Length: 153
Image (tube, rainbow, N blue to C red; front, top):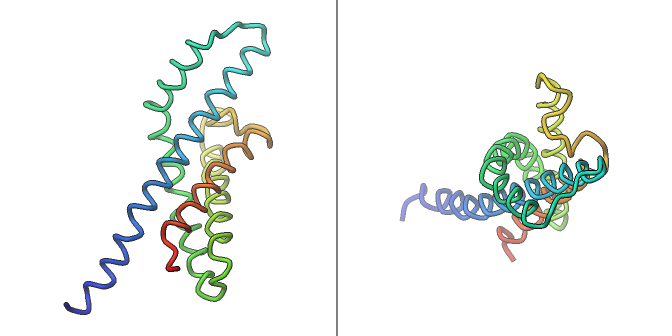
């Protein structure tokens, strides 16, 4: 065993939990934005049967969730790196730091895209605070999951 092996193991030990958390957050966000948008249509008087809701949700999980995962990754990488750095001085708060960073990273990434997207907002569910918070909660829960899966205790 040489000096290079332990860091590589540490890196891969964090990769799979991070990918799992990312997939779960992307799925959560995809379902939230789909149902948010469908509910807005219901508010306009359109009837949307359960079968159509389910079909639309599956289509968005296939089509939107991968795009949203990329958005999450762009926000998470710097946010989680800062949280992991801060957790060195506050190990007991590691889970809270990573959870908050995942939620904040999601909000920052979405708002950054909104600033450059040609439409008013890229994800309509994030136009107002309740929808933004609903999606951020999923990201924060995924950050907590990542913290739990990578904890040393």
